[in-house]
Length: 322
Image (cartoon, rainbow, N blue to C red; front, side, top):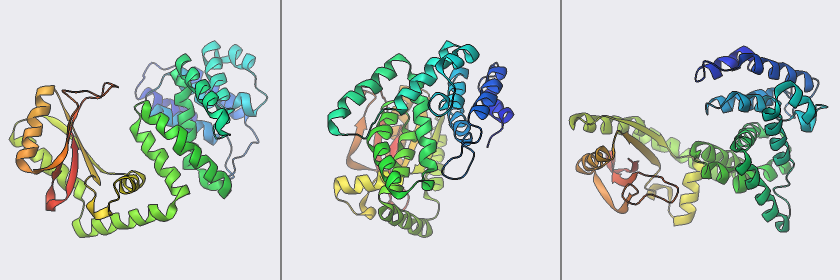
């Protein structure tokens, strides 16, 4: 478990003027309230709120949200009350913890007739304070990372709920990294055979081709350097669930997928985006029908980039987002 000074150091990395005393008091209070409580894994229960707080530091969230993470289960699982939290940590924190508690108590995977009402409550909570949802998403992410300690039926229920509700919600809020991790953790529970099959194919591909991501990233950077364009390049292999879903949707074999590897080029201006597109298409052959210009026609949510798929190193198709 991360100790309180390490947690404060994580916050200070992005907020040097954070209220360290507030975080220390919340840490001590949460530990005291959860004293004697254990997780299914056998760990002290308080390891969970601390892990949730640590996840939220990765998103550079404010002191009130970090404190809410430390206290998010106190009203539900301990003798602590809304009034206690208000007097000790202020109305803002008490309101946030109360909001997380209400979301936790929603029966999200209940009967279909109740689903619409539950979603309405969920989005009402979002409109009041987005931080409630951020804490709840971090809470679910840590629970999914540690789900193996639950019985199989409970694992399957939580995984379906995560796949249907929490992963899409993270995506809608622009946290694609969290959506992908939640989906993959759920996939691991719901269809381990399919996931293992894709991982085995990845291993085979790596043995045959080496570290493709590193090689193609270096190739793109080299071409940009020659063209005297400054940009950052990030590459990665897609998550197993993302690959499996694409295989199912398009009825394709693994070997025929065009975007097992994805690359993102971050440019300094719109003009540079189009220059980079030209550089990439001069260096590699563009795949017909795999080009989208969201710069000239942005998505409804404001997303702007250029997507293209090219036949990259050794003829492997790769998707590039600029």
